Length: 154
Image 1 (cartoon, helix red, strand yellow):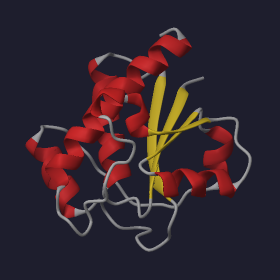
Image 2 (cartoon, one colour; image 1 turned 180 degrees about the vertical axis):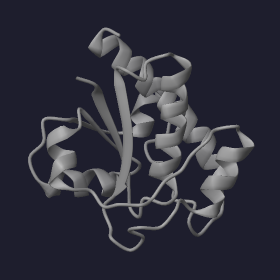
Image 3 (cartoon, helix red, strand yellow; image 1 turned 60 degrees about the vertical axis):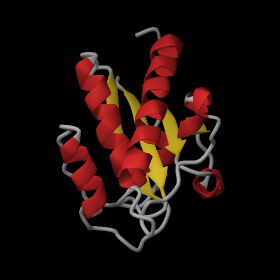
């Protein structure tokens, strides 16, 4: 059974899809596709059914990371099936914890990149700072993958 990692932000069009794509890219580079399954969702319903934000799509293309995504909302299945529920900010993490009981490891993405001295990935929806967010997400994803490989022995 694959280890399921689900990234969570508010609308599932900017940060969590970017994290999903970057993490999937890292998993593929490490030849771990059979061991790790990657997904993303949002805690809000505003963007359900939409593609990733054009800024997210643009920055992923610029970094050579393929991605196709349709926004969806956090569900009870996520709480039951995910091994890791990784939030982009404290509000997202609190929303996950309020959503119900889970056996998943719930954490903030940037806690896996302590060298950054930041805990939250800022939302680029209004600021358009997608490249900055990419750098943060990439560092968090690298640290998260190292954590999972050590913890899960893969």
